[in-house]
Image (cartoon, rainbow, N blue to C red):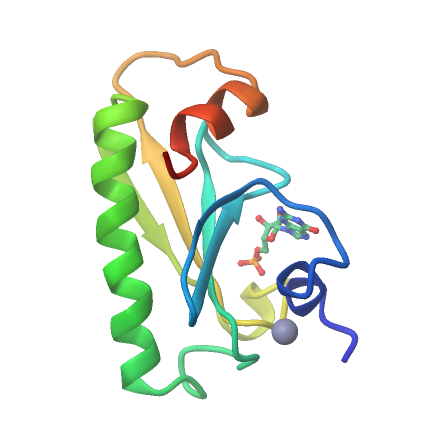
Length: 121
Ligand code: 5GP
Ligand code: ZN
């Protein structure tokens, strides 16, 4: 299948992986809106919020909570915005949730620094 996120799951395209379990993968966005901008995706290909089953949404939200805590502890975020695009607003046609950290003050961190802070111990 010609899906960039399925290729990331298969290891055919590299990524900065920050969380993985049997069903869900989370990695840093290649073009971050803010430092630590992360994408969470189901490993089973599905298009969007209409096609995904509720069990998978629950599994994704569990990872949202894990990463929120990790971002608070490791990146000192002051807030977190969730974004999930559909239809013409969605560029990559594999369901994903954006986690966009919010900082009160400007944050200057390289992608390697963010990855080293956010990845699993
Ligand atoms: P959306 O489909 O919600 O508009 O956004 C897709 C997101 O995927 C964008 O923020 C874009 O930067 C990110 N993205 C697209 N291709 C890749 C890739 O190959 N690797 C990573 N890490 N992110 C990607
Ligand atoms: Zn896919």
